[in-house]
Every structure is written in C-alpha cells, then in structure tokens.
Length: 188
Image 1 (cartoon, rainbow, N blue to C red):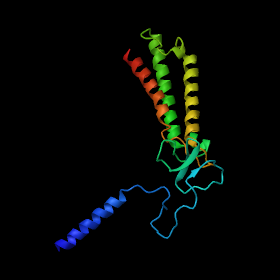
Image 2: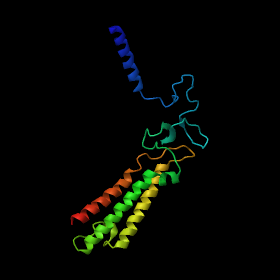
Image 3: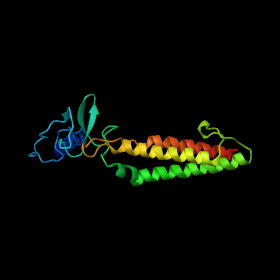
Image 4: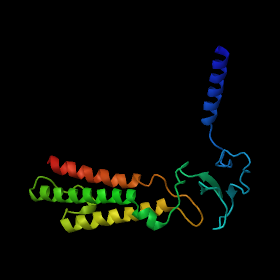
C-alpha cells in the first residue's frame, strides 16, 4: 500500500509541475499530439492582411521585425478591435462617464467655493476659473483622452496587430485630478 501511495504521489507531483510550465508559442492549442506545429514563421519582416498567425496571437513590432505573441502576454498584446469597438465598449464608456461626472462635480463645487470667496482656481490652464472656460477645457480634455485611449487600444484588426492592454491608466490621471479638486473644494 505504501508503494502504491508513493507512486501516486510521484505521478501527481510530476503532473502538477508540468502544468506550471509555459506553453511554447508555436505549440498547438490542443492536447492532441497528432496536430502539427504551426507551419508558418512567428517572425515577419513585413505584414500583410493575409499574413497567417496562430489563433490567440497578435503581431507586435520589435525593432524592424514583427513577432507573434500571445494575446495579453505583453503591454502591446491586447486583442485587436475596430476603433468603434475600442471607444464604445462597456469598460471604456463607464471609465469616461465616471470621469465626466467627476469633472462636473469638481467644476460646480469649485464654482460655489470661488463664489463664496473661500478659494481660487489652482489650475493655470483654466484661467480665472470662469464656468464656461472650465467646461470648455475639461470636456475637450476628456474627449481627447477618450479618443487617444481608443486609438491606442484598438490595434489593427486587418493585420492582427495587438493594441495597448493598459489603456485605462492615462484616464485614471484625470480621475485623480478631478478628485483632488473635489476634496479641495469641499475642504475649503
């Protein structure tokens, strides 16, 4: 019985260790050993819309060559999509609707604080802090950041080129800016 348990433990340990190993990029995405490895190179000098690439991989530029990498395995390995998909999906829309709400709250709280004479505008881009200037500058900045994030996130669907995975980090800077303004307005 002890020999049987020792053999079972040994088999379990070797199987668990094998599952932790990284999969080769050219390995088939199946356990079927009769499936051949990829018949096309994973490094290209030029990309064309008909350049073949394994499923679950995107092309990423490295120097003058394009390398095939697994989706979400590097910073520029996001799933490729159209600009419309990148700009108007649920995550992107929610991120920028929250930013718009935070900016409006910051503007209105700041306006009431400035009207009472307790504080002044600290952002030099907003001038003396009039309401139309604040809305014009802030809403334009939010729109520009939305389009910039969507462009970086989309990649290239026809060439199967990956997009930016961490697109949400630059908009978080706008969140923090608005939150600092809200806290500052409430505190004064």
